[in-house]
Length: 457
Image (tube, rainbow, N blue to C red; front, side, top):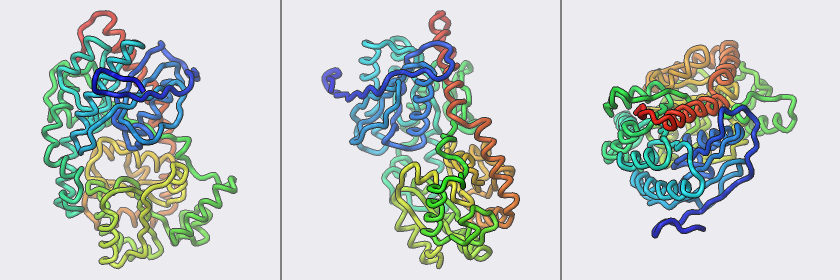
């Protein structure tokens, strides 16, 4: 433990040595400021973990500044992890963490100069003055836009109007609804003062341009995050252990006819999978309301929901009221290996979210060879179309049910979608692609700064 200033204690873990396994334009020390990092998994945590590992493999030094956690991060060669304190309060933690992260960044730079700073918004809040300090005294800043607080707020409101769940039932939803506008000023600070911003979808870029009125010199690129295509992959039926895991899983969920156990799409007991936090904006209540209509056409279908959150009891209660409790299974948590097997074993993945910055679950499904049914709104439509899945009107249970049934009624088409989905991920949505893209972005802003040219932002 090392003292930093007079108020902050920092725990640092340096894991392994740098092992170069890919081409690199130039060595850089990259400091990533991320409110999530394993073992605190989430969309941001996942992409930061994989991006850091791939950048380190390309010969760069990566330092992660993240929030303290009771457990330790999994080892990554060439990556160091610095943990800082944070106030455990909805929304307010972003500002508390941001202040401590800046102290840690100053200390890190004083003993190992940083070449580029990568801040993952919106889980870290900095003022315009703090962004300017980083730009002028430490290194150029690249801010990743993982969606916006104003977008989150709209998603919560839309979900509440659709009677997914009352806002007051979840402290995080309530905080987003009440303080989202206030905390959005820190997002605006990022786009006004960073050397470059990188949105995780065209939709997110449009939101920031509409809501935050950036200057005409605002520089922002779009890089959609990838997924771990080695973990999330299609079934290997030649692997006896994996086949036994598949059979056990299908039996546990009561969707285990002979065709299902052989991964045959003509199964009469299809497994529908939904993954994500059990919060209102993820649209699970819409999915439960669609289940009776789905079961009318496919009585052997079973819905498996994987996620933690405050809505589990309410979802089960509504399923009982609708008479579909027998077809619903909710799992709170599981290992990545188990989750990957769920994606492989499912016949269909449904993602009914009311708001996303990008949404990684659909990509993990496609990488696993499983078609996706999701909402007909951006940014999901940037990744999913009729060639790899089905779309339905956001918040409409009847339309969701129709989309699911269209897919289940067409096993041959679903097989073709599965092949195209995997191919789409490998061509466009991998962390190898992300590492190459961000390496170019870092190098560009570093060279621009070294030449003394004015910052693009």
